[in-house]
Length: 429
Image (cartoon, rainbow, N blue to C red; front, side):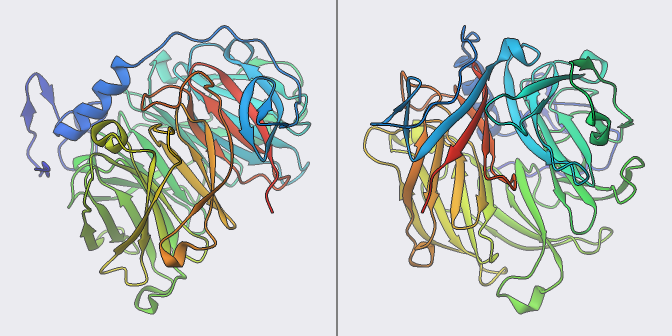
């Protein structure tokens, strides 16, 4: 049974969980629910040392291999080990293209900071330095998004808040530096993740010590002056979300700001157009759920792809991707489930859709690319992969943490927890 928290603090063992509104005591990765504890405990139990790797040059995927990595339809352009981008271990990754210079940059989250890497020449990436964690607060979970040439960095550790960094400061830099944030937002302490709707200029911190762990909304339209905008607390802890200005088939909500959230055991849809009066539209569970983790709309905003972080290890299945039809936002429907090929039992973690493809970071199975052209029929197929953890495709939380496929150049970057930064080139039809 899911625990939905209210405005009163709840004690679970020795842990204090969040209360409604900003400024309450901090906690990490929702220890108030069994699913939240299980996910965090499994991750920590499966931690491995950083792999001792060296930088790798470009290698074409030939006969299922590129520089020793299993692959299909994805070439290696370059690899930088963790020791070359600031050390510690990696977590989230995002990207930025400088609109003035056209240069492309990978923003790599690490346990003790955020790395900036110029990947404009993808076969020879250049590390430009580190933004240390706020007050040196090391965190297993760090997350980054970008709005109007600024990076917004959160971490699931007490007191971190949100760092704001002006990415245009990277222009002309050629040697690594230790950077400082331009602004710090302190209306929450820990936050598991952050989403940004770039068309409205609002950020959504999730899994924080505020808003019952739900959406903590921040107005970032003035990028260096973030201000608190409101809470979504009705459904308790939110693990991840995507917020869009809606242009999908449900014309009732055309032009509204809609968030589709992964809330541990449900897909929860909320209209957040009015920040002072958000409205939950639907809350739907599904058979076989273990930890509803993260998902992303198709580009037409009709279908939603969902990953569940614990179903593979709990049910002994191959990697599963749940395909939802959101033609009616008030009544989402699960229309199919993609199952990875036999032997690929990796835990799925984060995925992002670009064009007809979903780019998934599936831990030990690495980058997996799904072809979505038949999603209306409840089906998907695998179009390619690049396995950053060659020794195993089992359901353990090592290897690829996340991926970023939105560079105009077409390259894809992947963060390997124990490995480092992979710069890849898919070859898709």
